[in-house]
Image (cartoon, rainbow, N blue to C red; front, side, top):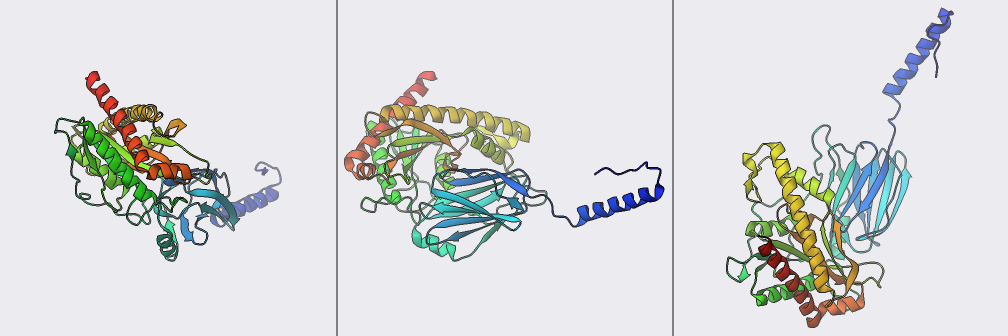
Amino acid sequence: MVFGWTTKVRARHSVRVSVFLAILALWLGGTPAVAASIEAVQIERDRIVITFDERIADATAFLLDGPHRIALDLAGVQPGALPRAAGPVASVRQAARGDATRIVFDLSRPTLIESGSFGKRGRSLILELRSVDASRFSAEAARGSVRFAPPASAPAKVAVTVPETRGGPPLPKVIGADDSRPLVVIDAGHGGHDPGAIANYKGLREKDLTLALARAIRDQLVKSGRVRVAMTRDDDRYLLHRERFGVARRLGADLFISVHCDSAGNPEATGATAYTLSEVASDKEAARLAARENKSDLIAGVNLGAEPSDISSILIDLTQRETMNRSASFARLLGREAQPLIPTKPSFHRMASLLVLKAPDMPSILFETGYVSNDNDAKFLASKEGQKKIGESVQRAVDIHFARRMASR
């Protein structure tokens, strides 16, 4: 709108100014702000990340049973981009509800929001997921909604989160060769109240398969006599993601392998894969670690408490980039050694932002040994022969990995 501020008719000029001031007052005082839009939704195996083009006020999440769904109400947000289904999400829907948007994630298996947090500027929402059994899901669904809200000026806080443990669980026993040998920590995924994926074949549970596979890998590595081995769990109990790699770090592990079984809506999906940490996740974790009030952690033998914050950030970043390179190298090596022994996907090595891989100074992989949603894979994973071949695949890769390290020194 153009106003004639220099018109010769002064009466008309004053009327126009009054109208402008009235409109301005209404605009500043009573007109709602322009709604934010959804820029992207990224679904991974254990998290959902939603980004917006503007800061949003808050979000409310709740679970819906029969069928299993996660519903998310986003205040002051217009509908926007939606992703393809992935991980535990079978499909995604959205709809405007007044000045808000509701997104519904239809689940392929019972999955909880373990924690949720906004990014620093309130323009991203990260939901950490965890698979559970149907009874646990129903119990959590009955508890009602959970609200997530970014603070006005401080870094975002989690509305509901899993408390961090002090000191972590008791350290497991280390077995195998003498103390001069490298230490490999094997992590059996899921456990306790978290069964993981459930197979159609005999109702096998992922948590039981991963424990059997982890034991087979351990036995094969001990038999080789070239490394020491420990397991994060050797029974049916649940550990938080940070507790899992935390155990390995406390033991001073040289390599961390988290064992899982994949699942997909397509029963024809088959083959093993290995995941390592993505570049983006590395930067976020480095920032989180550098910002901790107590930076007394030893990273690659350097005490961060003795360094300024900017130097700490650089040291963490350099260390984690080197760790990521070594992790990726081992994943490719495992794919090569596994191919003659077990079914593998053509694109064996993949990258993702998986919380269990975020130790900054320890090469780590998540080994998806096969699909429990595929009957042939499930039978193979449950068989003694299949478990032995998976153990042999890891043992071959581990031997070559540490032989190369010794040679490079």
